[in-house]
Length: 269
Image (cartoon, rainbow, N blue to C red; front, side, top):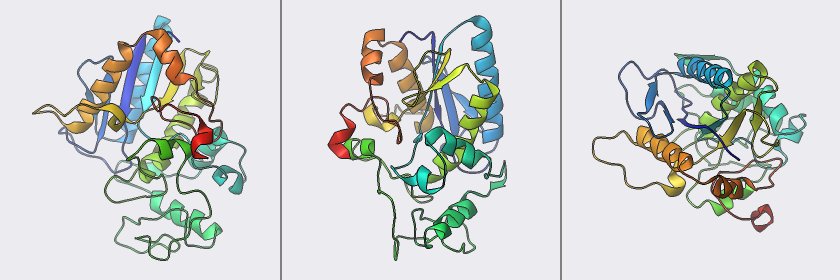
């Protein structure tokens, strides 16, 4: 499990955040160096493609982490008619419409909910207009799937991927992040492996992280998102390969797993 570079990314499901670096935006950091501010997903995806191309050309192995779930609770992908989490990435990529000033994530969440009766699994309409099937709150909410992945029962304080808006919500990040990961896999076919769904025997490894899992206080003058990715990238870059291999020794073939959370899936199934 030797990697030459560790690049961590704090993703965002929202719109363009402007030219001035700020919180609740996309930030990336390589090996603990100065974090990079990326104002929207289109800029970020271009940056990531350039990064991967450069590392492949140099013959280096890259560990690339993102702070959103790589899978949904068990049963969701199958209920949509797709086989497995990576096929679900492609399913979202075919349906998400994205631009710096807006996207259709809330509408797609409502469309999915209507397939299952219109009361869940997603909730949290963050738009001013109403969306059929997507409740603003959990009043009347019914989820036909598990509320959390197995790993989220072990990672105390983590949020469910069904929540699309509101404090701490990660649902929008997931829905807007998975299509980008699907495109990276297609663009660099045969060069990218996804943990824990695939063996990490390719030059680029995609890893799910959760910076809040083990983060020291944010130093004065730092933007929290920038500090988070710097801390994780620096910590992983300084980790012995054997220790990293231990963290990666996880079996979670449908839901995915957060790097650094120990324990067997059976504990929280």
